[in-house]
Length: 123
Image (cartoon, rainbow, N blue to C red; front, side):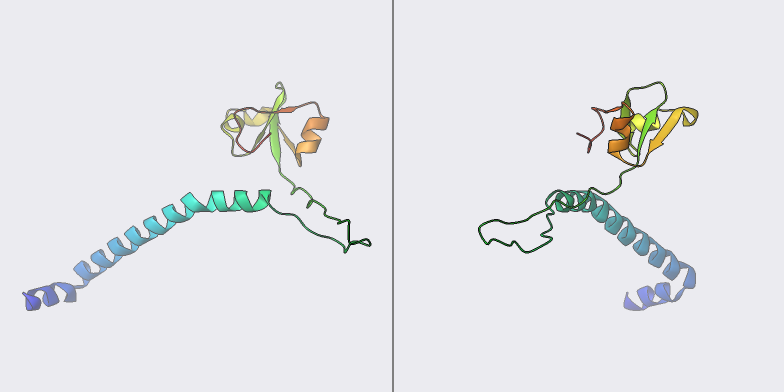
């Protein structure tokens, strides 16, 4: 039995087929695991970050500043009233000719747009 298995593995076509199959299975598992845990970890870390920028002059007071919000690109429709993150379902429904891009949420609000209710991550 051992000799038969050894001779089977010595054939290049069989060996490489098994090797490619195993690499594919491992890659799929790792990719799925990183996808499942990656989004939640990034989200939870970005919400809880606070930076102390300077030492307080008076020990009874503390100076804590929120970090500057990262520049988030949002998209809106020329004929609509809502803005969406680029990966939101509503953003995919806007025709490319009608899309207006904003470099930040503040710019979209200043232009009169409101956040879309079906877009997770916008409040």
